[in-house]
Amino acid sequence: MDELRPGDPLRVGPYELQKRLGAGGMGEVYLGRSRSGRAVAVKLVRAEIAADPGFRSRFRREVDAARAVSGFWTASVVDADPEAERPWVASQYLEAPDLGVLVQRDGPLPEAALRALGAGLTEALASVHAAGLVHRDLKPGNVLMVDDGPRVIDFGISKALEGATMLTGTGAVIGTPGFMSPEQATGGRVGAESDVFSLGSVLVFAATGRAPFGTGTVPALLYRVVHDEPDLGGVPAALRPVVTACLAKDPRERPGTDALIDTLTAAREEPPAHRPTVVAPAATPPATPPAPVPAVVAFTAAPPTATAPPVAAPAPAPAPVAAPVAAPVAAPVAAPVAAPGRYELAQQAPVSGGPGLAGNAGIFTIALVLSVAPQLAVFGNQVTAMSLIRVALFTTVLTWALRALIRARRTAAVTVGLDATGLRLGHGGAEWSRPWAEVQEVALVRTRTTVGRRTGFLLRATVPAGSLRAVPPKEFGVDSGAAGVTVAAARRSAGLTLRLDPAEARELSTALQRYASRAYRPERETTA
Image (tube, rainbow, N blue to C red; front, side):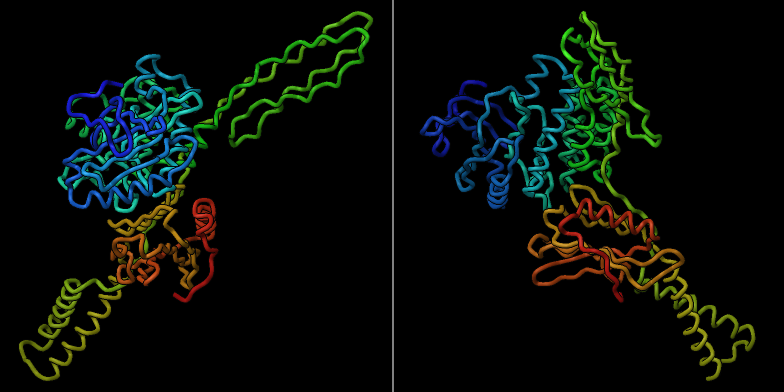
């Protein structure tokens, strides 16, 4: 916290500014006081960013969404003015050091504290994402270490999940380079997975005192984030798998917030390795022996081993006699870190529709050549009405046969991804994804097509029309072999056709029940 500098404003809105708390890519942050004396953190947007066309309307939407963020681990937004000459937003001020200051002062955190920090930050991000936002700048300086747990602050550069990118209108990338995700560093579309990557970077810093991609110039850091593997030296071995998953280059391979919380809270405090000696009074009847303490057993394919028997109660005696000590309980085996909670399906699916104009022209040319060649070989160069009829007939038949053969052999890579964040559908090189907060309905519908043990299914997701800025890609249309795209006044939907055996169908249905919950509609048959 520093004194105000020459040129700093003395008042923003109704708040009197007293100190400088910091500065970032979007602007400066000040400690302010309301007229009643309540402390707030006021973020003042830089003038050049405020001049960006369309910024104020985006900022207004994001402030409205940020006010909806709730949870134990966030500092709430209390006031804002998107229409001011320099827009500003005020949030709850918490008197606590940030994570960067704490680690610099006290050193890296132990494993138990790292797990508590990670679980708290994950719950904070879940709250942010549920409000339709991406934080986009999760870093040690934006994590306040309050006594009862971490708080995530600074929603000043957060952006709505729908259509979020990391580029301003002038092409500048916004965020903190050492803690950005690869998609942020390249100016691509960002979603909840981007915050998960930043969470992994923050955990590495808390465990080691350094950022996972080192230090240096901005271009060097951005290059390492996109291309290099993180330095996880010093991260506790039990936490490395989950941190590695968070720092996956591909956003689709990162875990969702539900799976992260499950993994980070899986390890509990180990029970004592032995039970204390109990001394029975001379004239008092023996107490009821306590229930046996089971050993903690890891979840493995083998059945858990039997626990030690309960401590036998000592027999009464004229003089105090120490009760026998129970055999030591077996030391608990540390539960393995769970794989990130996510369902993935990938298959080659047949593609319906014709091969297109160029393809049809090529097929016709091949059929024509195959029809003319036998005519020339048998009848020479004689051109008669009958020869022309034969060529036309053979060309038509061959064109039909070649088109049918090509259509039967055309396939496309089809993928389905489900986690606690949302749904992703992939078809060839195209991808369509939406967070669960936007999905009105997900249907898994059985069709009447069957090939061997595999049955045809239609997986369709429906969202409100207002939540999409464009129709889903044409790869999800009928002509490209997917389930089709429906555009109506009130809703839009897109989906994929899949070929599933009974086990795969049950697995997908179970994943939908787990992740889509309220939006999932049970399977029914269709004639599609």
